Image 1 (cartoon, one colour):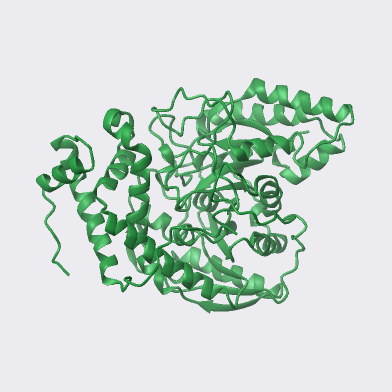
Image 2: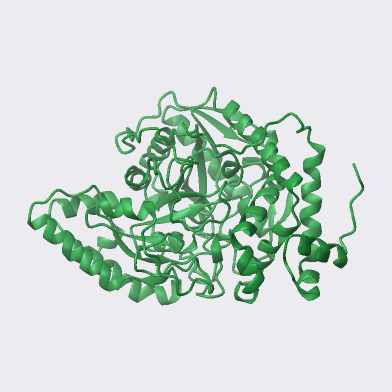
Length: 62
Length: 471
C-alpha cells in the first residue's frame, strides 16, 4: 500500500475541479484537515481483503 | 382533561373512537402546549394550527356521521421537516428550502392521513439531516427537555421529533434515520423510536441524505404506539423502488408481552463494553430484565463493526454530495458550517473508495445475519453516552476519548449499513436524571419480533412512563 499522501491545497483544488466544483482556496483550506482525516479512514478499507466481495448495491427487495 | 397530552397514541385513538374525547379537543390540547413550551424547546419549525384544527373538526364530523374511520383517526402527530407535506412548507431544516411548498404529500404522510392521523406541524432537525446532534443554525437548536438547568442536545438529526414526543408537544412523530437519526434522539430524549428494515417503509417524498442508508420510521413514547404507526406507514410503494412487496403484518397483534424462549444476543465488544459506565450498567440490567421475563440471553461480538466508520465515510458524503451538488455550486453560504463541510467532503471520495465501502458493508450485513441465525434479536446500547451539553466536543467512552459526533453515531450506524430493523427504548436514567437508551436489532423484515421484545421490556419496566419536568 502507498504511504499516506500529503493533502495539499493544490491537490484539493484539482480534485474539486475534477468533480465540477469551483471552490475558493479559503474554502478548501478550511476543510483540508477534515479531508485528511477522512482519507486516513478510507485508507483502512484498502487493508481489508475485499476483492471477491460483491458490493451491496441491491437491497432486500422480495 | 389535564393529562390528555400525556396519553399514548393508542389511548388517544381509543378515546376518540369511543367519543370519550373529541379530536378537536385533542388537537387543541397539543397546540396549547406547543404555544406554552416551544419558544424554549424549539421542536417545531412550522405549526399547522389552523389546518390541524380543521382536520380535527372533519374527524369529529366523520365520527358523528358514523363514517368508517382509520386506526389513527383524529390523532395528531409531528413530521420531521423533511417529509413533504402538501401545501405546507418543507424546509429540510435549511435556509435553502425555507420557502419550498410541496405539491404532494410524502407517501408516508399520505398513508398516515388515510389512517386518520392529523399533521400538527413540521419538526426541527439538523440541517438536511446531516448531523447526530440535532443542531440547526437557521431555526434554533432544539433543546433536550430532560435538563432544564443546561441546554443539552436532543440528538439528531430528528431532534424536533425527539423533543416534541418527550415533552408531550405531540404524541408521536415521524423521524428519518441514515446513521441513527431516529434512535439517537429517541435515546437522548427517553422515548421509543424504530428504524425499520431498509425497504419496509417508503422514502418517496422524503428529502434524502444518502439514498442507500436512509430509513423512515416512527417515534413515540411507547413501543405499542410505534407498532400502531408502523402498521399504517409500511408496505410496497411504486414511488419508491426499494420498497418490498412483502405483506405488512399486524404489528400491534404481535405485541403479546411474551418473550419466553426469545433468544437475545447481547453485543459486548464494540458496543456494551465501550459505553459509558452508567449506560453499560443500564443495558446489562435490561438484559437481566429480559432474562427474568423468560428470554435466553447470550453474548455475541461483531468484528466487522470496526470498519463501519470507514465504510460510512465512503458512502454517505458521496451520496449526499450527489443530491446537493448544484446548491454547493451556487448557494454554499446558505448552509450551516458543519453541514457544508460534511457535504464538501464528498468531492474527495473516489469511485473505488465508494465501492470499497459497499463491499465492506456486505461483510457487515453477512456478519449481522450470521449473528441472527441462532438468535431472534440483538441487544446493545443505542448511544454510548447520555445527552451531551450543547457545545460539548469530547466524550469519554470505555475505550478512550471520542469526539461527541462519532460517539453518538457509533452504535446505531452499523444497522444503517446492514439495513436490519432496530428499535431504541429507554432503559434507565443517569444519576443526573438523563435518559439512557438501548436498541434491539432484528432480522430483516422481522419488525414484529423487535417490537414484541421491546414492548415486553416496557411492560416489565417503567422507564418510558417518566416525564421531564417542564415549567
